[in-house]
Image (tube, rainbow, N blue to C red; front, side):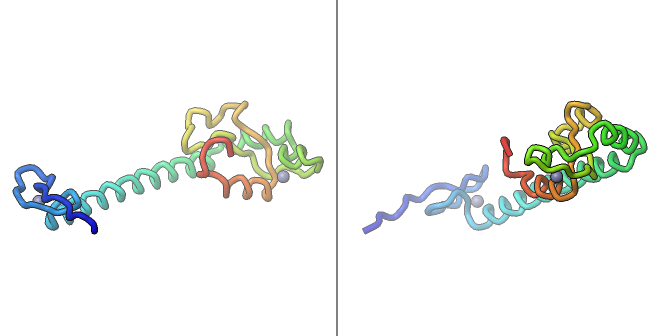
Length: 132
Ligand SMILES: [Zn+2]
Ligand SMILES: [Zn+2]
């Protein structure tokens, strides 16, 4: 038979309500959930803001010139080349994503030429963590 869990005071400061299992009394649990939802919303807003910034970057003439120049020097998709295929590059990709490494945005060593197919495949993998 499972033993009943001991009563503990609610974790909110100055709240004397006793709770069995859990951390907060019902009222403070609701407040806590609300606060967490707000924090999550803020995180998303920040992410979207950064995303907008990177979108802006791809529209600048500086980037367009740089990527055009890069593709002229590296006209083939590097990923296809590794597989023995010669596919014309259609996009210049940031190896370390612009979103997480904005300081490497125009760093030559952080660029690579890709075809659309490879770029999409790599894009899907983003977010799976390091080493992908
Ligand atoms: Zn409470
Ligand atoms: Zn490719």
